[in-house]
Length: 155
Image (spheres, rainbow, N blue to C red):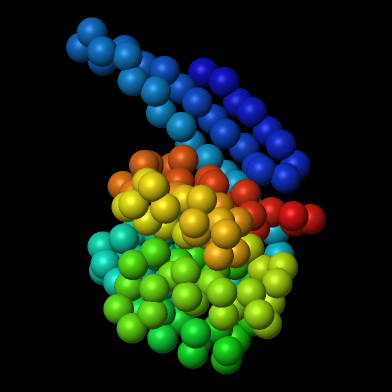
């Protein structure tokens, strides 16, 4: 068992257990709950992915507004202040790359994370203004940690 602690990232408790001849590793994270309240906009047309990220962020004390298409995402963005935007690449009405370009015109420094199933589009998405690109399927807590890193104090 090990415990790693970082003033910016929080705590990570790792335990290894041997159950019926198979080693398993369990990670328990306490990340940013002591930070000032954060608000994220997440646009994703796939309900399961949208709920998965929303619930996980809420567990970390982050308010997560959701949109199911790019047009709705831009409407929400224009009516609220966000600390981060997460966009699916391919969505109805407006794709994530189009939304990111429009957001960058009015908010050049806000972190924007792209989520896509197209592993060949990462460079293109970065050129559209995304800070980070996560390839689907979302893999456990690692994807959430990549998102949370952009919400740390001082980033």
